[in-house]
Picture 1: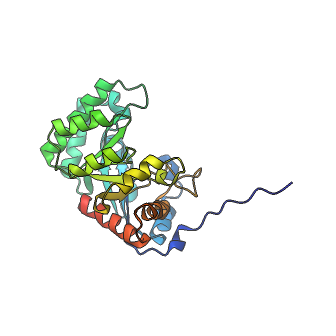
Picture 2 (picture 1 turned 90 degrees about the vertical axis):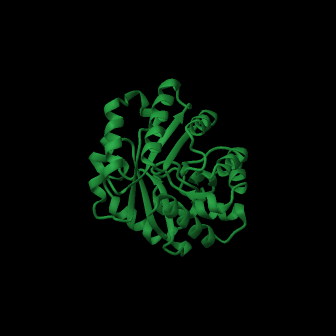
Length: 274
């Protein structure tokens, strides 16, 4: 019987990338990182990641976990009510969120917010109400917005355009649309963040969307601990794996890896103002 061939998993640091990369969307405050957060950040820096955006899923998560990043100024923050939590959001939740966004300088964007129709709950009308309320807050405070849109692209677009966000700083996190949606996003002056799923063999549609988008509109992310890229798929995702996503984008666009790495890092820092 032949032995099963061992899967090659190169060290991300072996790409030799400069310290110009940026992780635009991570959930490093989740329990999956409780045991080794300093090591996770160190591995990412060794792979060329200089800047990290950590997303807190609501004010409670921020208050519970922000202190763990006190010694890591390279990490900036985002906070918002995720659509899957919309049914639990109250007026007090939104008021607490507004208070944080007004007073905490490390919070650079309202997000991730939006619509998720993949799951049957919460009801779409509740998601839309909380989404629109947060868009109103972002407009009132002149904030950047990071969008979660899962099987809800038409309704997300309608809400954004209805509330006057064309031309405002909007980032479609974990972009999963087709080339037509990518062109629409770019046409409104918005940005797309590409996750590790672009490396999957079944992600032809996402690859086509990347090919249809100018590099100046692209960011990269892990959305860790989720959506681990090849060749580490099946393991916990972490920011050190970003070079594999960048390498796939470079292949799609026909550009040098370092060009994509540095450009997406610059785009992230420019978008978030860090």
